[in-house]
Image (tube, rainbow, N blue to C red; front, side, top):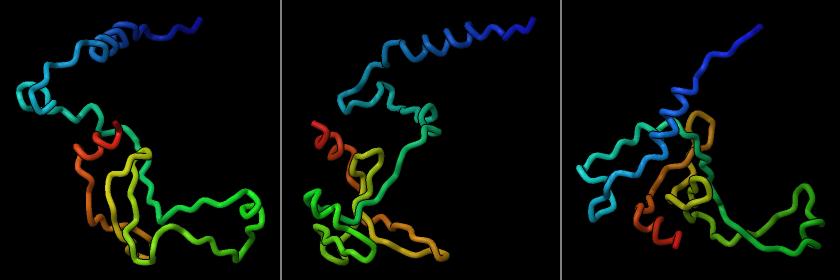
Length: 120
């Protein structure tokens, strides 16, 4: 008969750490004592995406699109792209080519305070 190891002790300890009351915060919203431990989130994957522009078109026009169609976007040529992390605007940048691949050079990063303000 196969038995699996009993991991309930480790799982319970992890749960207790996660469900414990958060540390007290100072006036700036940082944990009291001044140290922030980011180690617990450094391996969490996020989706990074860039947006060239947007447009709204009726479904009738959408269904008429085919190879070679041109869709006008709401941005002028040369404007910066928006950089999103999990759907939240975090920066603006410009397209660059590195070793025959596209990349983006960040030119302006949205401050954490501004990101929080936009959430409200």
